[in-house]
Image (cartoon, rainbow, N blue to C red; front, side, top):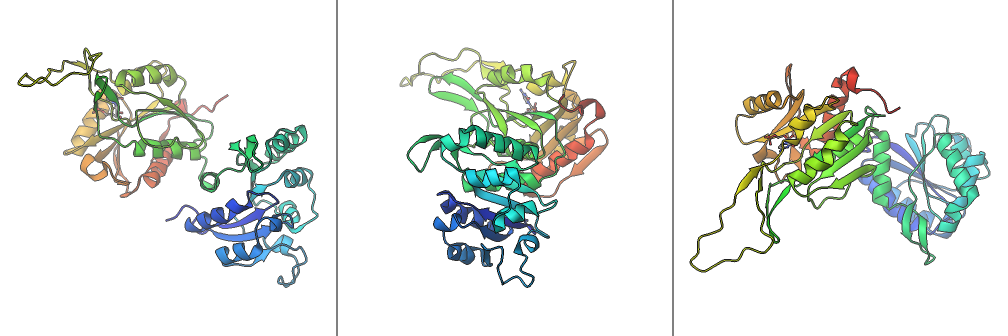
Length: 405
Ligand code: C5P
């Protein structure tokens, strides 16, 4: 099911060149199953036409508080009733000032003041000097204090040619923030540490020994934990994936790098989820020079050394976080997973059959704990990650559930 299935969103556009991105945002919201009603300020119509947004949304576009298409001429009341959220993108300097002061001099501003309990999100978009102006900063702080969710702004090149903070977030980022907004905040205040991806053990400067892992499952879990309101740190082996929003990523190459990155962070975490496919062995003496192929000579002999078991070490810490391991097996999943859980001294291990999830976008997980097994359906990795995070939140013992203080 798409992430905004059944949601009715009011998309408010205010004056700014970033309005051109709002057409794409509207499409992406619809792709995720949302029904979108567009409301524009007069300034927004200087940048993009109502006809464009009407054609894309397939619904009337609203600009005027006195619109006679509403039987009672109360568009400012009717539109927000039954809406799941109002998203202002772009939110101009002027519109943020209006919102912060409760002004209601056009349809969109009035709608926001009259919205009752409907959540309000806003993606600021303006020149960087306008964004850092003390009045704008005061207004942004006031809006946050009033419970408005600000998305961005981003840093970078601006339409005026200057560079700085004030660009509107890209449509995909705004969409992800909106989707995250609707996820239940079951890990609010928790600190979650994860490992993800493969590790890479150096043989010589051009050759490595690695595991087959895309990192998708671990990254999906990091995203799901952040969506659930946790403070998330992801220690990642080499992958081609983008760091999820609101997640702090620390890069590691070898198993030893990963071990060195994880251990100092582990005692401060409430939950540790070890998803990385960590190499069991490193190379004892990696060559400083590229090993050369000699005609007729024997291939080089690699001398292995056992790597530290990061998960087992974290689980044995005096102030250990609640540990969740992963087990990818090719057969006898139940027996191997339960044995691994007990050997590593962890409360939970999540098993999957490697041939069903490796290199795939879908997965079929089984949660193993002391009580037995809890199978999850076959589904996309993000959906599986959200379900697993929900399960973890529901089973987290009181001792690990102390909020950040
Ligand atoms: O020991 P094995 O690799 O079978 O166990 C898999 C689980 O242990 C995964 O959660 C993996 O991230 C973690 N692990 C680890 N450090 C290792 C090996 C595995 O943290 N050296």
